[in-house]
Length: 206
Image (tube, rainbow, N blue to C red):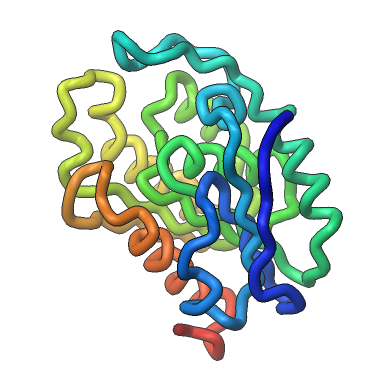
């Protein structure tokens, strides 16, 4: 399965596996974290947990190859030296981050930022398949629910409900960011990472 990955700030005790984002300013902003950026892959195929019909008329169907992609991510994890692993993603990568934490106990923390929690069937799956991470950050833009797409319009409601479900057994927070889905994704992810640092590593807060 085609993908690229880049490691920044190697050697730290905590590694963040950032799904779907190319290296940006993360390493400079968080020198105490190792970043493993995994990118350049087919989102609709690699990040969807099971097949589902397209949500846009001119879009593509979701082929549901997240399990195969997760196996590739685990190969990258095996190459990374660290004591604790986190996973983070935006949009469909945010959904995959949570799904990865349901399928494996490798990650101690998760940031699902503007995650595609509208995905058909995922909320029912969450009720039967808990997230294994001990700390989970969830956020969406406060205008994302205003989309005319009836499936995607459920994103804020579903994300809030997911925070309540996960909060029953793990430390979890749900935040609203100003704006729609296509906002400053890097800034929103960094906001989630700061919260995770407060929960997991208070002395390293940036």
